[in-house]
Image 1 (cartoon, rainbow, N blue to C red):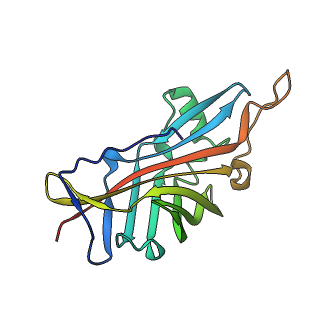
Image 2 (spheres, rainbow, N blue to C red):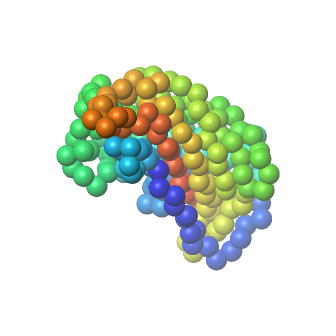
Amino acid sequence: MRTLLFSLAASLMVPSVAAAADWQLDAAHSQVGFRVRHMMVTYVEGTFTDVEATLDYEVGKLDALKTTVTVDIASVDTSNDKRDDHLRTSDFLDVANHPTMTFASTGVKALGDDRFELRGDLTLRGVTQPITLTARGLDSAVRDPWGNLRVGASATGTIDRQAFGVSWNQALEAGGLAVSDEVELRIDAVFTRAAE
């Protein structure tokens, strides 16, 4: 997944949020993406354009954080229609039988500053595996020009696509494989809720 930095429009820093609350994903300023080595020489990057997520979180209390992310797999976009159509087939994501990918958090470990580990279960192609994402953010809320509160975070991690049954590949004449098994993940998310 490509590295993105979100700029949150804010006119006032909000030092604390009194109670845990459900935050809604601001999809227009969020992204779920991936990056995978291709033909042993470069990387292909892509995103999913249809994502829903919830966040139950009180600012400053990472240990109680809970989040779920649901991705419409058919929304995969690598800027190449032919490749995207192939990714939707049973060779890769198998959209017809498994239309969504989900991540449900199971725990958080603070790493210092605004960094933390986010553990959770990732379900892809009907297979659920535990993964750990390294994240930063959520350390403060800001108030946007419309009076809403916003928090944001970026998270990265890697998965072995073979563990989820995404096994298509092709041997290269000079050696190696067309698509690496390791897939880099990137989530950049902004959440909002109405100010109290």
